[in-house]
Length: 218
Image 1 (spheres, rainbow, N blue to C red):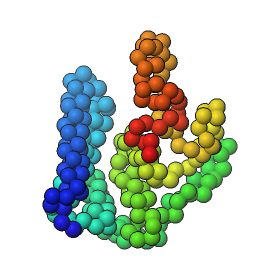
Image 2 (image 1 turned 45 degrees about the horizontal axis):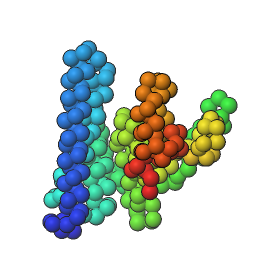
Image 3 (image 1 turned 45 degrees about the vertical axis):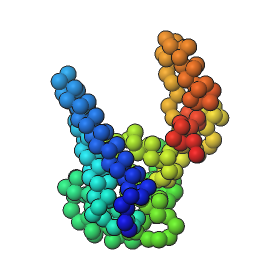
């Protein structure tokens, strides 16, 4: 597929630029954390920066060196993740057409729960292409849990086990995913006027765990 001059090329370049800037940002945070003796925090930022580097590398390759098919990009993304972690046998993993997500084995008072998905690793044009891509991206995002949660909210994938106890007081439907973390009480106590303004202007008047953010409001 020829990307030159297309909307796809512009989107890929924007993605590449965004990932590159994110890498620099996390590198900066890591240096600040190390200078303050926060070694564990610095290591988290450094790992996140490496993730952003590989994301940027993937988008850059997509601009000129890869075919534009979803399958090619999917396979290359997995190979890049394997390379990042020094893991062997990426092609063997990519050919796995039998393994599927396992069920939750149970713990304490919660019994076993069947997996909400049966999607496989090997690429297939079976109507579950987006789910397959997002499952592998979710794995590759480790240990960046914040971004992984954002992807679940953005796409609905990967399918996750439903919460067994809903403590939202009816705000969040049973089995639904939390969309955001409400503002902490100290914000209301010390910045009430601006909090009220933000809630009304950006959250539609509701500050709760079911309220979608602007990018999640489709």
